[in-house]
Image (cartoon, rainbow, N blue to C red):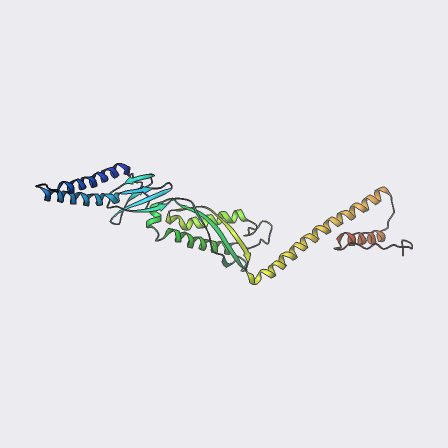
Length: 289
């Protein structure tokens, strides 16, 4: 079922007509006093009052970014989107549907990622209704439907990717936020197309290891950071030692044999790679002692 735009005339004219009908009914009641045809005036007044109350529900208002779905005894007539005071058949039932942009954050879900590690994940979803007929008739409660399907899509996404990528170009939940957000948006949209809803944005707002493995994974991350830092330090230290030997050879400061070069390299690496400041030792003897 697709949305059909229905044009509704301005309600101001019908409001005046309605007031005129009530005014005429009052006139009939007053004219009935002392009149020979009092019964006819009373009957006319009663008919006009009934007519006025029947016409009154035909007036309704449409706010900006709002749609009103019209039905006649369960049959879909159309959707009115023209703003302001409108009038339609008073026997039409009128249901208002907001077309404004909305957003919500899912609950913190506990799921297993692609590697089987338990994680906690949540996302914010921005959405709006684009087809009022589908939103009204295709699902029972489109707002609740969006919430449930968004959480289901988020659970499914968490099982597709790992929390952290093991390789440089591997897509992960933590390292590929833009790719994961686009995949999440597409996943939710595919589930909500039947409800006349458009997903504007979907993005992960909370991502963490589950409490039972958080401490162990923190130690793993710290170990990885330490190894990466040590590798960088060693790489820099080797470069500095190489430069020092090269400069000593070019300037002929001292001639070192292979054994002395090895000792010098060892000492420099200890100084450059040590976590603590090196303690100098003064050699009072010869270079060989």
